[in-house]
Image (cartoon, rainbow, N blue to C red; front, side, top):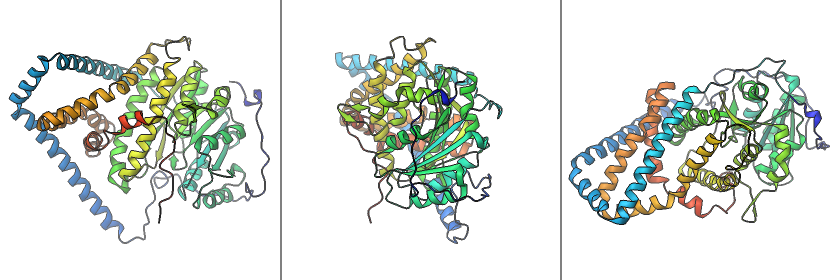
Length: 493
């Protein structure tokens, strides 16, 4: 493996107020309390709150199941109405065309799911290599208005089972308006020379904070970790081992789970959703060497691959406007374009904070949706070229699936509105039955791997997404040129 000394690195001189050199020993236990959001044990209201949360969860799950089973029963009772509706569609040229297209798309999606299942069963995470073979590693933690959690993030990194002399930790405060810098300095005082902290003169966005870290880093591998994320002791060594085993590996995606599952209903739903999107979907993509997005919560990049695309990445624009979102997807796309593999490590775990309220959730999805539209346009420009030596069929299939999903957003939205206007009861019952059938797969997947009772949140999440977040995709497409992080500002008092 090439050493980082083969590359010309930009260096930076630190001012006294930009970093701290105090050193002290740290005692940070790697027990379960590290990998969970700590609760205040002295709070006498905690047991009562926990009981209320459990009761609320049971009510939501029970209501969800009643709705879905009720929808299935309603479909059975309205069979004659469904028959008449479908017959009228068949007798209409437009209706027949749409029906054929729907059946064709459904068959494609089913076949795609079966193929993904085949790839999932073939997937095996790469085991950690020895300390001697581990590459030098620079961990970059950008932070903005993160508060105390950034301190927990940095301590979890320092507690990693990774050779200290091969690990460089950089934390960059992107002009926070809260006490993030205080918690960074606290971590610095505890970790001493193992941690370097920097302040941006003003908030420039996560991409610019990472850019500063890339230019300061000296490792053969760059690891980016969000400042609201906690890693396990063996996460880093598992995450970077694929670069040693596979010379053509350009980036690796970590396995993201939810940190704040005890803080609300939405985190419980998202935790089940994340298991499906990471441990199933990205496992399949990894078999094709084409993980489409390395998550901001935990990702690793070969430094040479980063420097090859860094100028284009930091200066990326969309419709003439500088890109300040989707920096992880953009970096993944550019590394794939270099012909390198992007893999997934199931054994590289990270817990990350997710929105606990609807407003935060839809803003996060809008940001992801806009980035998805932008990067699929970028991917379309190279995916059918000879961009890599290995087989390109799998990568092209993944792109086609993404493209079809985006392209069919508006046609299906229009059909949904028409269906609601003409036959609202048929729409409601068929949609509920569809959720029951389709969501059973992630339910069974999660139940098999983790917990049966928690798996039922997949039904509730699908219900929420179908009726409460269906507008995200069409809105994201229509506003793809808009920028803004949306979810990091402080609440107004």
